[in-house]
Image (cartoon, rainbow, N blue to C red; front, side):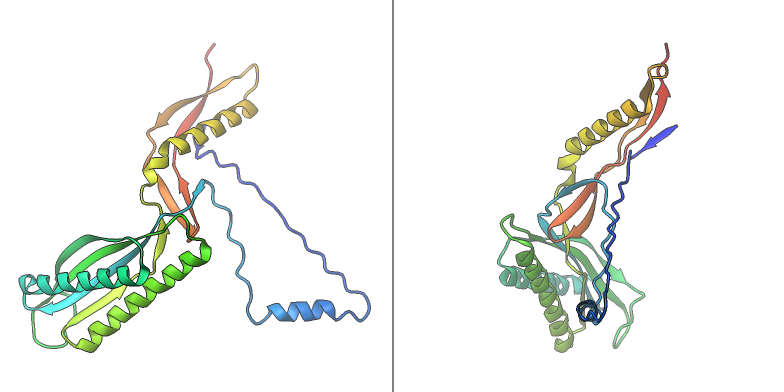
Length: 241
């Protein structure tokens, strides 16, 4: 028998009864007010440790038309620095950049001439202050989206062979591994609880053949919530007497 994640899903069913008697116009009026813009369904509750994110991450890419990477690097560097500066000035919070790769894209289409395009990929990290509420954080997301749009439009308008693209800001935890001990403790508590319920006096159980857990994973729920999880795999064996 294998014990994986020890997930015991709960299910809450909300039943709404709407009774109409005679010529009731209240129900039809309320229902019609929801028809033009339907509310998205509630997502299933994720298992794991829910924490507040402390950073927004925005992936970006700059493409520079050039005959060689050597010629493209200074222009790409200037474009990234200009973007980071614009994001810092607009957001008014701590901003950092992590470059992922710089290289040549020989498969890209150029507007004129021959050769390859220089490509620079990276991630912009924007701090999420603890004091910010949901709406302040949402406003920060909107600001970063606007900055990206402006940078892309400015690059195209300049017509210097530079193109820019940006991903949507994602709320995350900078160091999810810092919560590993807490996640492990929660897993052990749930495992012990399950064993206490599943075993009998004549057939006691114990955890065996546990594999080393992997990395702490994070799943963004909103700008105010991230779910951290840790996959642990063990087998339940009967205690030898």
